[in-house]
Structures are given as C-alpha cells and as structure tokens.
Amino acid sequence: MPLCTSRTSQHVLAVNGPRLDVEILLPEVVAKLRGRQESFRGVGLIDTGASITCISGRAARALNLKPIATVRCGGATGDAETPLFMVSLAFPGSPIRIPDTKAIEATLEQQGLDVLIGRDVLAVSGFTYDGPAGSWTRELPREPAQPLQLSSPGASSLDRAKANARRKAAEASRKKNRRKK
Amino acid sequence: MPLEKERAWFEQHRAELLEQHEGRWVVVHGETLVGIWDNLEQAYIEGVRATGQEEILVRQVTRIDPTFSAPALTLGILRAPLYL
Image 1 (tube, rainbow over the protein chains, first blue to last red):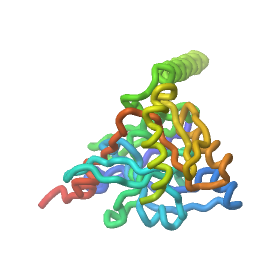
Image 2 (cartoon, rainbow over the protein chains, first blue to last red; image 1 turned 90 degrees about the vertical axis):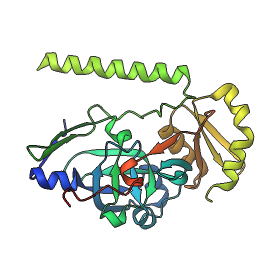
Image 3 (cartoon, helix red, strand yellow; image 1 turned 135 degrees about the horizontal axis):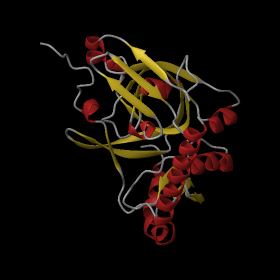
C-alpha cells in the first residue's frame, strides 16, 4: 500500500502546512488524442478545507487544458464561476497516482503553489497529521481508485446504492486482507 | 465564457433530462447530446473518445448546481503568518 511520510519541524509544518511535489498530467484519453503525454510539476498543499482539488491558472495554461464545465465556488464575497478541468495527478518519488480527477482553476501562484489537494481526493486516500511531531503521512489511494460521486442533492437512489455496494465490497476486501496477515 | 452553446443546451433540456436521468452525467458537444453515463470519469472518457474533442461539456443532471468551497484560499489565508 503506497504510504509516504514527510517529516519536518513542528514550526515549519505549522507555517507551511502539508506540502508535497505534485505532477499534473493530462488525462490518459486526452494524451492519446494529442499523441503525447504532457505534465506540469509544482508544489501542492493538502487542504482539508477545500471540497474540491484546485490547480493554478499557469498549470492549466501550460497544459492547454480545456474546461469541461464551469462551477460555482463559494467565496468570502459570494459565488464565482470557475472553470472545471479533468487532470491526472502523480507524486514524484512515490508510486501514488490519481487518474482522471476533477480540478478547478484557482489563483494559487502567489502562494507558491500549483495544486490544492481537496477532500475529493482525500475521500479515496488516507491522511494523518501529527503537529507536535512535525510529520504527516499520505496513503493514496487506500483502495483501487473508484470514481467519486459528488453527493449532490440530485444524486439518484441507484447511484447511492452503487456507491454503497462499492464501499461494502472495499470494506470486505480490507477485512479479508487483514485476516490473511 | 467557455462552453457557452453547450451550457445553453443543458439549461434548455435540464427539466427533460431530470425526468429520466437525474444523478447521471451527460456529455454535450455543440448543441448535440453525445451520451449519458453513470459517473463523471466514464462520461468524460467516452465523451472525448466519441467526439475526438477535448472541448465538451460534462454535467451531472441535478436540480441544483453544486457549489464548491476552499475557505482558506478564498480568504487568502493559505499561508498566513503564525506569529506577528
């Protein structure tokens, strides 16, 4: 199971937060369409306050990403329309890879960041934060990546039933693996 | 605004789509419905394959559009100083 621990000091972790190198890649289907894979490497921050993963405008431009929708983002001064992209994420030096995930564009460059890893990615991963020890651990993904359904008010009972079935199957598989060990 | 035609098409047909496909994902290219799938990833992959285009609208059929939030980002405190 891919597990990576980052260690720094209590103070540095408190100031910088859980940061890591991230590679933003084209979704596989787009790479095939363009005849080549392209990537943009930058710094990411795990943000449990973000409901969705965000990427910087410079990353979106560098990869010439095309939006698949615009979505409303809640802000301090009201909602704003923001482009939504599909991307894949990889983490240099680790086998962890998140294929075909959604990400909105956000102004991150001024913070020295290119990715905010939100709860949509954390929903299929493990993340522990130990402030006093100045360390944090990521474990992505915990199970073979399953498409994450947005729990919107309109999600059908069929979709909910499918999601429940997937969760139960994953839980059963975890228990089985634990028993084997 | 990107995907203007596609978004207009979706708004025009939202009520109709809700009747039979609530919660599912549609792909629209220009003013054409490419298909309807059960999840975003599948809709996106099949939509790009079917149209040979990256510029497609992929939308979940919902009554209310979801809103996303990233409070630290919108408040500008992703890296606020700890000690002043």
